[in-house]
Length: 441
Image (cartoon, rainbow, N blue to C red; front, side, top):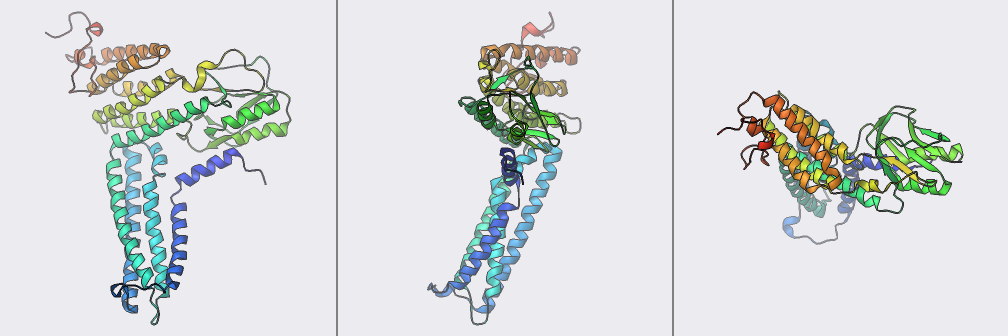
């Protein structure tokens, strides 16, 4: 049996975080155990109105069992409706975050735990024995279950709005970026480069994937420590989020090391069926752009939703644009043995991902053009100086796109204006972008 690697632990942790059955199962086991203990503990003196006859106890517990079973069905039904709406209105990729919702798991856990607890008590009711304390606790758990169900329903209804989904995804993306920035300050952080880095010599080993999948996460600290221990240079030619076929090169090793030691590097990269946000803030941007694209499709035609998504995209881009992207600017010259070189996204990559498709699909939407311009103009003033050229390039592309789509329209000047609300906020047209004599009045 192979050793438990970092990649296996990461995938197991991801599975447990996304699983909907593990926490409820533990609650069910706990309910059975507590039901047995409550049925035995009869030494506590209870008030008269908390004591029950055998027939009343059976009726109360039967009602609790039936009620919790019905509530479980309601929760599952609501969850299925959310899945259907998310895949049709938001983005199927958002479901990975929905599965991890703690309120959903807590509601299921309390309901199933109450069901198991009450059923265990029901089995112990006899003509000469009534678990009075347990029945009272079961009633209290039913009340708690009802309250949790109402909180869960309220949470679901508020999260079914696309802007709420975009806000949640943006929050996860910013958390991933902040975690990456903190990791970059570690003494065990690798070197990051943009574009293609090719060492002069051929690698001594190529660690290949055992199966196809997307790179979900990389144990950067483990790779650096391995490289220092074996006095080797490691090169990772792919970034987190790339999909690799079976047999693709995962890590290139430069240095004298055994095949067995090199194969251990395979366990420091986690591959899965889909991307995750944990080490991939670009995936959060991808999900938000998908929501905006769907809102701009002819079947939906909801540019206001796209504008609201741009609000959260702008905040995410602002954070990225004011960050030295995981220490990438510190890479100088050829790395020495004992180091790790990883390819990474630059500011241009994040900006193009966030803007290109929305600009393309929203070219004929005046709201989208105006909000995009406002976002880009704000970024131009707030991002790092070395990032501003990319923002200027996107502004020029936006102007060209607007001129192409609106050249024969009397609203060309309005389409060229910047408006933080898309349409309806205070905005002034940029006369420098207008053909001579085209401004009205």
